[in-house]
Image 1 (cartoon, rainbow, N blue to C red):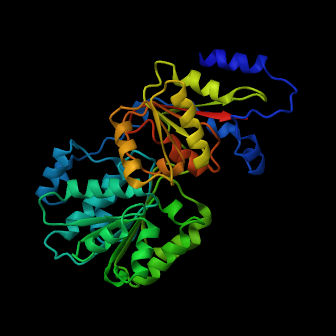
Image 2 (image 1 turned 90 degrees about the vertical axis):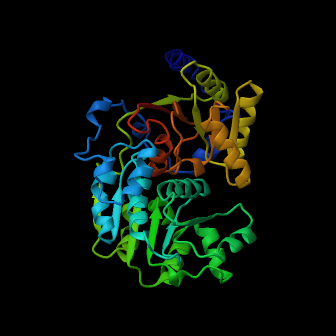
Length: 399
């Protein structure tokens, strides 16, 4: 079917100046588009990219109870980023970790944090900041599973939830606070969260946290903490323009950079689908999704309006689909993600809110209905497939 689409696109090219109503040509014309060649790449054999640690989970230099909890989660050996970062983090070094999505970055910083908190009284020691609500919730769930039974506590404070409930949470000291920049800043302004208490700062997906939308909040939070004993940055990509800010955050850091953070996953087969002027882009999307291999599909669009429009069209065509974006309540977003994870829906349509760090297993395909606006965004989008060493497939509509 995919080859037929390509042939059909060539035959239907016309000189028409009419834009297809289901495309985003007007939006695309206003922004600088990436080179389409960036979206084409054949997957490499998985056996060439598999990392084999020289030690097992049981050999890690952490408490036996932590190891027990990790084994219960089904982990047998550390991933590369975990293996190469744990000692540096346990030693208290400032740290920058760069590794592709699905490689265990969350566990890489949480395991040392839990180890260092053993036996300590809760007093808001660790602040972990995430760019999205979903990623913050995921980090909190992972933390609780690693720290189970150890008397170490965390709270998650994110936008889209009842702020009074968060205020109630903060009345009881926790070891770890995990949250999004906006909600953290709001609670600081209300003087119910006191940054001076924190000694360790973790910025997960730091490249996005330091971009134009979040840098001001992050810098205010950093200033509020003051003297930090340890600062930890993790991401899948590295933005060279952020080096000045990163240098201010870190002091003599240990850096672990696996491969090139600006190159997308080797185990993801990446193709472009050219949309000729006048073609029905939505019909092309439907034909793709109706193929048997498209079992669990993430479709990305640039705006909330386009996400809703695509989702509505998919549902009208009989596809089990739903959507997540910033206008949806956190409860709605959580329910939709659970339905997608449990395969109650086939297609999840989303803005880039779903592209950052979400651990959704067995996503068969990622489809960029609209081109991402940066290579970093592209890497995070397609990183939802081909996770945990599995192969994946990504398509990007061009034109």
